[in-house]
Image (cartoon, rainbow, N blue to C red):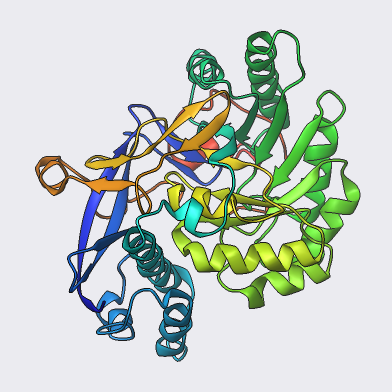
Length: 400
């Protein structure tokens, strides 16, 4: 079997409500989803959900190769990009190709990827993650009631701009999940998306912990700040989770060595091989791993085969436009199917005909606010609903 070509597509995830985090919000709830499809001379095609930046140069590393040599091809793609730097969206493109190759390899032997990788159980524990910072209280409650109906008993909220607001919103979700679980205590997490300084993180989380039991605080400071993450971990009771924006084992090493991360995260967009290697590194330090992403299907398959998987993120309950997957959510977990490969089917007609946003919006969570990490107060001057930074800058001085 030989790799003969590739195609790139772009579809969209439509949430039907605002989605975002401390850095900004997509008010229309539409998020672009890039797709890579790898073709072979035996008619088997693989699908990877992820960027296709520098795709032609990266594909040159695997063109004509046997796709079943997927881990060797992963390293080959890294070698072909080392001068430009295999990080960011380039690393994501490598991850998309890598995921597609794993899809092909599993299809070639007629097995779902979770079985090929050595998993014994198709069930992967999940937690709810609504990208919810732009929601009103009523919308927040309604959103997490839907998750609770699927059996989810843990939730991660977006926050970090206002202590009182975060406390209020976490309490609302706690009530929803507690009621659904007939009084059992739910798991609660908060994601600050790198919006704090070290001291802000300790103060903010410490105040929340006066009233709540937080399972983890996610990305409290910058992703590469090993000493800062370690200082936060020492200063709060909650675990510190981070890693979704790190690209390569060389970036995880300093954080783990410094004691800066208690829960190691990897993003679905970086690919299966990356996840397996990070999971092995974390396991050597007796640390759990947790996949992150809106459509983490490939890492769900991989998670079944590692001994230190903790829980996986469940964002949307519907897949991107034109994407169908052989999995469902039941009793608080993803349940993977038996379709060979990843179990992904692509409807290119649906993708093409749908109106999509294929470029970044002028504002949103992909743009870091100018004063992130340099805000003085943790107070809210008014309603927290607009996508403008002036309204969301609620930990800052009132200079609007």
